[in-house]
Length: 239
Image (cartoon, rainbow, N blue to C red):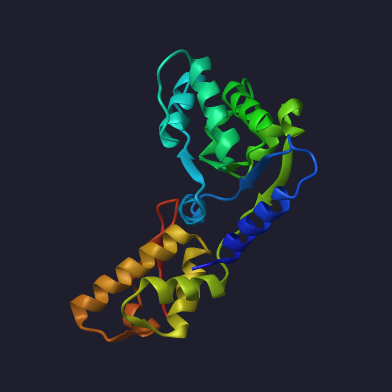
């Protein structure tokens, strides 16, 4: 399922691949929580042979290098510099794109040591690096001019549009949903993929329990399709 956000990623990759400055190899991907950034970029990585790495809050520069090396299938022997050099040698040969999810953990207002290591790797190898973060992540990167100057593109991911929700419902559900119910899912979810998937799961459970062959707004009236991130129930009260 290729959403509008998926197409934005592909467009950014194509543009950065044709960049003039070799060192301008960083791409920042920003977006609100819950819109499916992780699922989208992990699937994109899998389909294109990229290396997907989920950043961790507890990382040090050394443990980050170890996780990158592990993702690339490389040995962890030796010092941190040995591991980094092994990564550089590998990427120079393969030019595999690296994708760091939860990139907000790579830098903060006090330090960008981990991001500086990534910058050094991309500078040396020329490999593209996509950094997936929250909406304020580019502002944090901008504080470090020597890193910000390597950013080739900033991509803003958006909540799903109605067409994307329609495609998700078609791809993910085994029970038929009426157009009116799909529109209700779009409204209640506010375009957040997590909410859409939760709504679909709830509807399928209700359909199975009640032997519904097709589900309309009336079937789920008064039921909560999903829970928003403030803990409030997004209930369909009918239209």
